[in-house]
Length: 108
Image 1 (cartoon, rainbow, N blue to C red):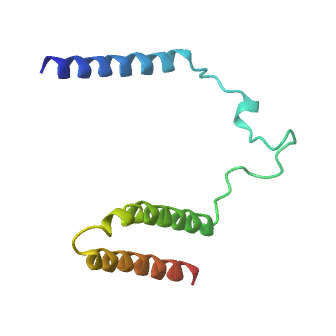
Image 2 (image 1 turned 120 degrees about the vertical axis):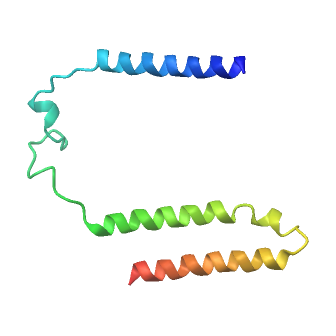
Image 3 (image 1 turned 60 degrees about the vertical axis):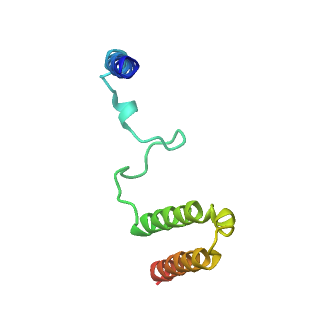
């Protein structure tokens, strides 16, 4: 109990110190150069606040989806050594089928 309290107090103290240090050291008076978008040294040609295309977000979602697939399928070689590898392969095939259907849906 004593070690847990020590770690909690230490982490809370360190968090408060770093937060206060951050507020103390930051520059709170941005000028016009800091607020303007950076475009390789040229003056900005348009507004920097244009919305992104929705296709950008779809690509990001697809990346996260297939990144999750890799994380789910990573222990597959060890799972085939269990007593019922057919169940493992069935679940793996189901996951791959669902992700493939999601990919086809996103493409259309």
